[in-house]
Length: 598
Image (cartoon, rainbow, N blue to C red; front, side, top):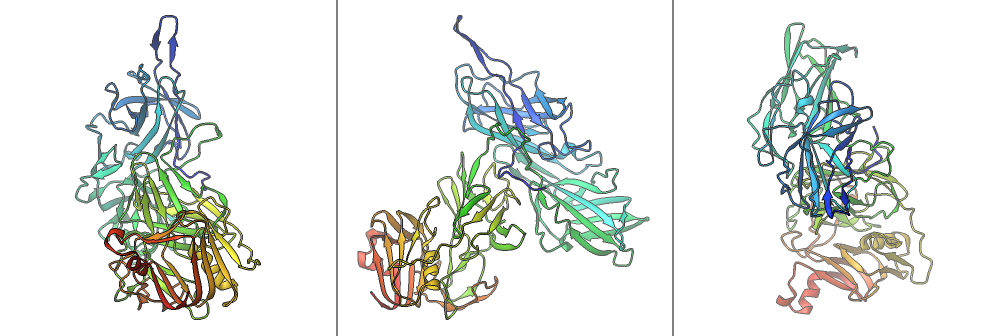
């Protein structure tokens, strides 16, 4: 299924408006009820169709806004579903009412309800699912909008699956469906404590066995705790009275982990020989989001989400050298140490990947190319580039900023973004899946025909030709004669970039104002060691390629350039403390010059 929306959502909670008796100067509130939409992605897993059913139970908290402090003991209140066709109403024998003093509150909740929850800790136990998956499908929702008696008329909650689902189906060597009599999933953690406030699983148990559910279709399905794939995770199944075993690690190499909020269908070919597994494939149409559905046709319903993205979903006219940004509400996000960020063309062609598990290695003595390195420059004529360690993800306030590798995107092309939930850590971030975040780049700018051959660089929402200085320089190097005057004009803003210019003359880099244009980066010997230089390398070199030359600790590396002019801008290496060095020494750490006439 394709998704038109960026953010997971699904449960719409409608509140009855509070009213007051002005004549008696007293305030009365009506009980708060919730209404949930019923569709494939807005409800819990069930064996009765994609819908909430009468008797489904939620645990709901009403808390002081921007906190997890319950209001008036409104903690873990049981709400029960009453079936109403395409929507289900949830009510309670002890329903919430808004504080009469007008103070603001937020809501968060979970499914399925448990009376064993203490101090926001939900006990997870997945060992025996033979009776069905429904009772094991843990979902969580938050609403951080600051509702009050005065302002609120309805509340929207965005529910997401917190665990994962695996499905095992079998076929013979002729492609015909076959059904094992029994199946056991081994080597997976089955118990843990789920923290409802942080959305983190804690104190996971020693791996043990899971007895999955077997629907009438003959497949086997189970809810599992997200985990990296290991050879100890196996299925043991019985066909014709004989038992066979297969390891999840033997599946398609695309799959390295079972991730939160995803459903995975494993199709196993059993040929009955001494090596019973003829082939194993993961259904490409099923390794998809399980936690992000449609809101239906009610476009007026407010979606309460905890982050926005730039470029916006389905944006057009996006800079080819754009940054990707996720701006979160509430707590600031944290950069993950695992997980990946991937970019694909609309047809599924992979374009770029950042692997957060890779470690940066100082390049003073060379190294191996990985996804936390970038290759800078135009490479015109001699295929020489500057190879540097860089920071692909940074945090500024509540915003996670993603810098893709240089020159990976093309003009006038549609892309989609995939982000693992582990790559950017936030209590209410569950990752971004296919078709949730798409954008289309703008057409290539016209080659400038003015006397100075000027291209412009500007901020995220500017109409400038480029978003980054490096992309603008590369464009001029590749499109204007080496000795003809070329100019990059930079609009006011802060530009976090390491730069490289080589093999070109008569080049001007001009800012809108000296104090308004800041070019800066935190570069230092421990990141990109030595004085640095360029090296010959394929522009699209694979990870693992040997790096013979560090790009160096300067901010701007310049090689074989005559008549280079800087005008009305400031360049800073933010690793250097201005109060500890002279202005001249600081400048020389910023720019390294080889064969240059100013």
